[in-house]
Image (cartoon, rainbow, N blue to C red; front, side, top):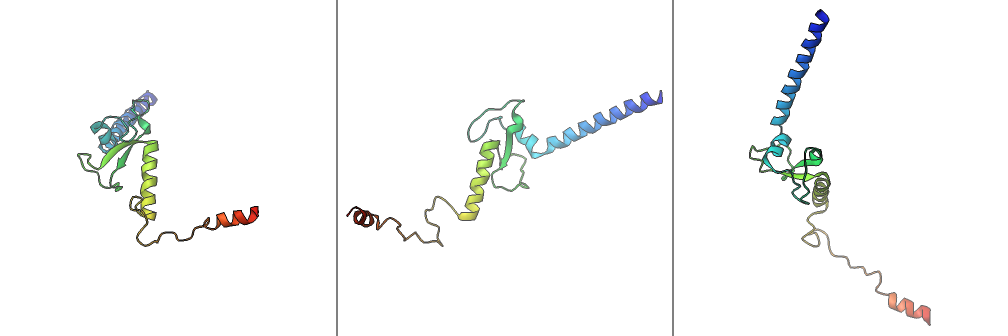
Length: 127
């Protein structure tokens, strides 16, 4: 009889712990974001359901994972592919500067033209 009691007590403890863990996760930003926003990628507009929602990530717009306002203003839902792309672009911008400004301020434009003399080289070859 004691084995049955211990078994049921262990099961009750596991269920209670699972419920506490679920409540704790729901306090996390992912669960809050999934409740706030429709399950659609903010970039490619792919829609998600219960089976595929694991492929939907929460992206921090300012790239600061500690900035989690209750209104979700720093989050957007992105699919795995768009999320990876966003972080790749961000890392490139951090390493090489803005891609929209043309030549970076501390780099000058290329001055060497490797094919400038090509026409004369080809005409000498044909002669």
